Length: 302
Image 1: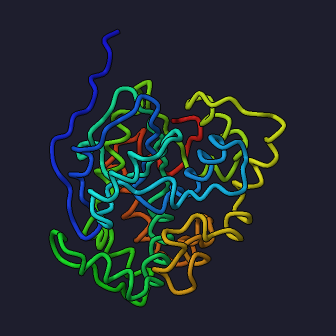
Image 2: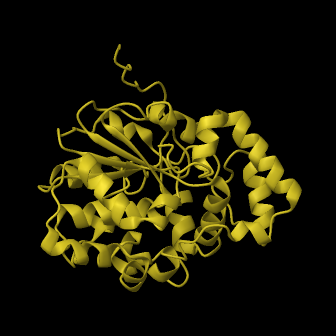
Image 3: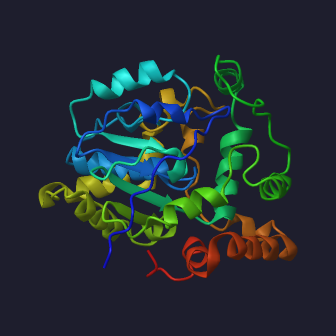
């Protein structure tokens, strides 16, 4: 069987959050780990899992500092690239880009986490509605922004969802192309697809699957510590080690950034029409297999 071709970068992606050009100058190492999501899909949780595996259940793993969002445009890429290059541990880096805006390494390991778009929106609304002036200033006023500024959200999460649907990810970035791009490379040997709902249902099993993929041996004497430090309650209690800059960009601080970690809150608020529209759009944009995986209709699909 012929090997699947490696994806190539075909465009730059820049807005109030992104500067994809940073990847053009990033120097890969053979053991790099790239953690990808659309956003609000379990990114920080997966960073915590990888950090705990790499550092054997240590209590002082500050993933917000150790695992940067490389394509976030602040701080500028010159600063960020120098900091990442100076790291001596096995690097684990976060991205929210679609694959075609990345530089893809055949040697790095890629872990992509998916989550039902409706759950993404509910989590994103909490993230956005609690953002403070420092957040808006960093994204909108730092030199180099491409395109319009990001604006405050409406008062209603349902209206937020409807705007997000009507404008494909507004006011953040396109949703469907992100999912499609990663689904298209799911069979590459250096790509692992993880679902947020699987992490919720069987965190120990998913951590072992991630460890196997990353070829990180698990020290059984530290297993219970790893599980404890990856639990929602522990991460909520130590949110300052997970939230960017300790949570200074959100009202309520880091505790707001690590919110609830739950699914299905939209079920009591969206109308039947909203739900049907989302499901039809997911099928149209993603096809049967990918939309089923994203909705977690078949946990065996990975």
